[in-house]
Length: 356
Length: 182
Image 1 (cartoon, rainbow over the protein chains, first blue to last red):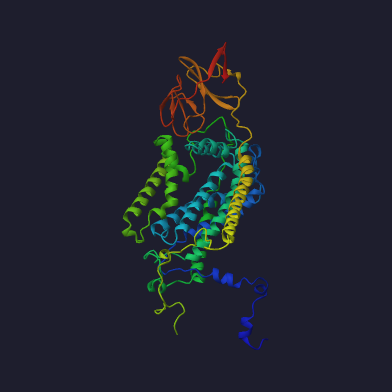
Image 2: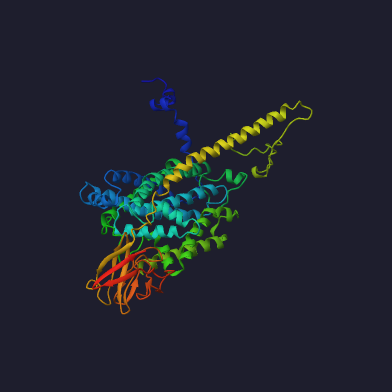
């Protein structure tokens, strides 16, 4: 027994002596969280879903075969023969959908609270890139089961990319690996889905988290001063660890419960094997592309293609266009109103696309 | 006890960070009256900077060229065999009916209309889905975005397709239907 308890407390642990990571971990556990900050845990849940996707995706890749001849059968094998295969595949399917939903909710929350304003402009830009990478995951992962829906969604999706002015033809050829959607396309999509996008997302997510850590969370009631004021310095804060982290963990568990229910009640299905000579009747893309699908029915092709491109460009550049320091929602009528209108139009188009 | 983070009233307040003007030294700071050593050093520095930039750009090009080249497909897949191909008989496609057939690696649609047997590329001109013949409404229809085409001419009747379906040469010999690939 050590005589001096204080000396014992000061002695670093076995691990600490061999890593000296204590200061790094301590620094990581301190994030500025104003009492009035309300994140609704959307971003944290999206990150948690990415971890689920990385784990389930790695497991699926052990059985999946990325060729048109073998892909469909390997997905059938995973679903019907492999132990817990249906569960792992369904979790991957539902977590992908939820990840897109929560990234969109996180984006909407940050917009509404004007958390993209000084000094968080770059955090927003990195976040917008993360949103695009997430959509890319959905697009590339969709083809992999090689069923009818997968095949034709990819035909239309790559055709849309091919209609982009000036670079479309090259883009189409690069995406498909030829003129048509074939095994070459599958090889490319598989490589992008399991290597290029996960590495990009991990890198961007790391950068996003570093920025959030360094800048802290935004106060939705007051703009951040360019020179620290007394009011800013004395703002009441909430401890990041354990208070905020524990709340976040509770949110993750709730999400996990929702995921289990969805997976059990609506397991991921599989349509007929892809047939390049027959487009099935009433084929539609996944819900997150239904808005664009319906728009393409209503307006000339070029407008239907350019509208989302311009929208994404505006989204990325938004912090540099809206430079007023005001953060309160009721004093940002134009930005909040415009964003809400676009959101309502997108939801309306999605519902219309679903029922039409 | 006063907190370390409390504002220091006596501390001199500088201008805001973005208002501070940083004065950079001039590009070529050769002191007057030196023996040319300064300008020679600057010249060497500038040369090294150009050399560094060149090395950076050429390394980038060296890495990117094979990557981009690798991504360009080795064959376009657009090439087709050409020639005449038997795709069915008039018994398969009676008057008032239509059918999607394979013409080489591409789908084609054959419709037996009142004006004779017609054939078109079955790839919708909107976004590449394969069209079908809807005998209930007597039109060629795209299942993706609901485009309709005239089975006699291939022209767009309604919906978003921007152009007609490209026609394919058809010849009927006895009861056999042949299509000729372009």
